[in-house]
Image 1 (cartoon, helix red, strand yellow):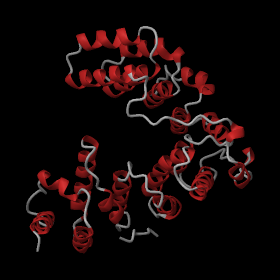
Image 2: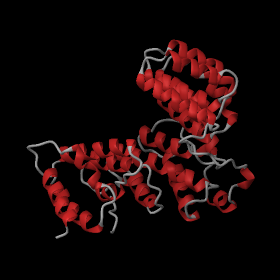
Image 3: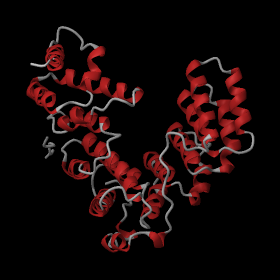
Image 4: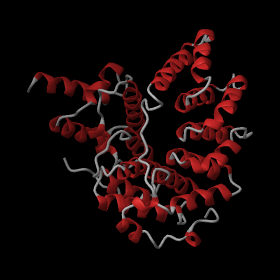
Length: 348
């Protein structure tokens, strides 16, 4: 047996040794799994304790967030069919950067049929990447159209609110003419969660026509609504939001997440006073994490607001594929929701 495969046997032994925590130094060995290693992992995976699986997937997600060179896709695709809902959710999250179009029917089936609400919601969120890729013509037309059809079905259907809201958020990337009505319908609800999802979708739309809506919620007393309004202001590069964002920075001293969102949105909007403000904050900053975030924001500002962000394809309605319009034409405004109302394994 080759030395590296012998080493992987030792890694699997450590994984199944519940008397000791799994060593963090071994986590990167699950990156870019060979067919042989994947088969070996599959052999022990079903018998692994639930807690060990969850801890492993959470740790791998943390590693992936800080190291762009690792790739845990093969492990995550394998564990999509795990019997535990929490494992399936974490597997979906671990595939967040994966752009393989064959994930579309997998995620769609999970969104429509998985017995766990959290899994259905996670799958609906994961489809957002493919809505975006569809806008770029980066996936086959059949998958682009089917993903939109199924997301429309879910938003207009009778699933639980969280699943439907995640579907709306994914549709925010779409330039289809029916999406604004869905967003408007969500805004009209007297429900903070739907409002938050509508603002999330607005940010993804990068459409300035929602400017007044975003501005009106920057002073919301609800922290989640304010946070999404701040993010949306950056995504649609809302220049009128500059001064309100400056004001939020002066008062949000105890909310680091909100401060970071404001800083990043200002870097996306740019313009008068932004660079000077961020540079002044760097000089006064005593928090290392915020200082690092400010430096990233300044870099983003210099690059025109495009650092580590997906650029939305701006399409006029008459540019939308006519076949797509025809296939989705039956989703009229009266079909929109007014009130809240088997896993497939990859073959390797």
